[in-house]
Image (cartoon, rainbow, N blue to C red; front, side, top):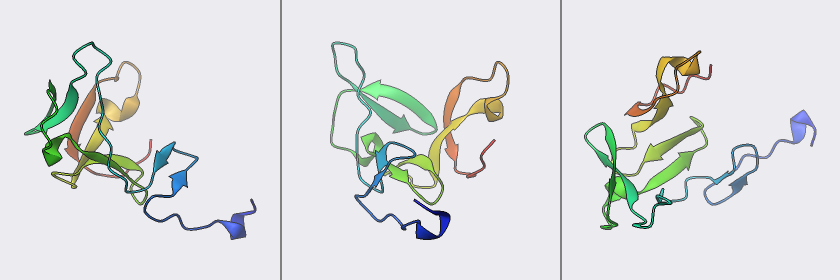
Length: 100
């Protein structure tokens, strides 16, 4: 596809560059036998049994290129320290949309 032919993706479209459907809800499920979901409690990601709350629902925001919480859409997953050497911790905090 040529640069000028880029198509604006809308809700439900597959973003092949990031591997997500745009603005479509999903759950992040543990591979442990309990099959618990990642839940957003305050600014912490915790594993909990599925409960139907928005705090367990996530979506890919094409504009910011981040995974956001449906409960608090201003929060998204981020890597501490800009992903620099030795900085591999994942946190959930206010979206800043910067790419390192």
